[in-house]
Length: 325
Image (cartoon, rainbow, N blue to C red; front, side):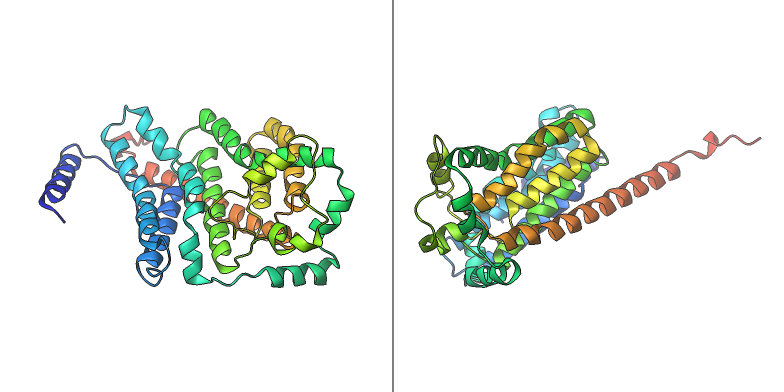
């Protein structure tokens, strides 16, 4: 550690003590710190041999430090809403950017593709490959509609988050529970990508299709864009389906008008994961229990946090405030 950083940290610690600043991390902060720290440790430890391991470890470490730095700054400057907002929404850049940094993590933990096992599971459970069958059933114009719905994966989670954030800010608000569920979803989903890496029917079953995915206007363009990400072993379970079901669940609980608005596009998104050849049917089936686990954990964390806050508030009542009859 260089002298400048040591002195800077000492001054920061002294300032926090002088102003009696208390830094509070919420559940999603802890999820981000834990997940990104684990990824960084894998890459500087057993995975340091993997291509781009050390640069990606630095990026994961940067994301892990985000909640600590932003919450500290927000506590030091409580009137700066920008800092609080950045801290509250830190999960957004983490979930979007870290997806592209998973390759060396997966290379370390499980580099062997599992597509053959997922194809066998589909054949055993359903007797057919859903993506192949849908090629003959879905007309080109409907592929256009489904592909547009598919890109709603990048829209609906933010829309619901904005609705809940504007309505009630705070750690124990509906927004806090929703973000906790979303954070757990990304954490467990990305962990599953590392344990069961697969590239999906569009690559693994390419010989089973009659040709490229057909549309009328936008299908070819939107399909080609989905082939550009740096990490493509993200098949099991279906993150698009799981996230959509999660957002629908919280929209039903906290914003019923938004639920009805996104219901049909959300169902179209889930169908598009098969019709667009991105996922096996097994991926969708396994996304359901993952959503159930995530929502249950988020609800438990939220209730426990509210209970602790209530107990803390009760203990903070001064003795002279108690009125005896």
